[in-house]
Image (cartoon, rainbow, N blue to C red; front, side, top):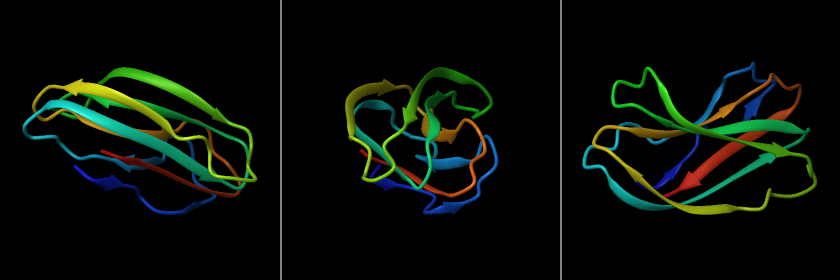
Length: 104
């Protein structure tokens, strides 16, 4: 995997996917850096999805309150099974712009 983002989203609805790794064919342990830029306060969820992309296996929410700069980057390691995926989902709709991304 590499840099993942759906780009800048304007006035996105709840549950908009801001970044998606796609199925990670080989699985394994990866080092991930995640961040978001937004023009208004927002809440996003980092999710680990199953191989069928139908169920969220683990989720962690982040409140983005400081809209004047890039959010502090979150760095972590994660182990995923074959064909699981990571994604960043906008929890609530916003009126404004947001971009979520992660680098693996």
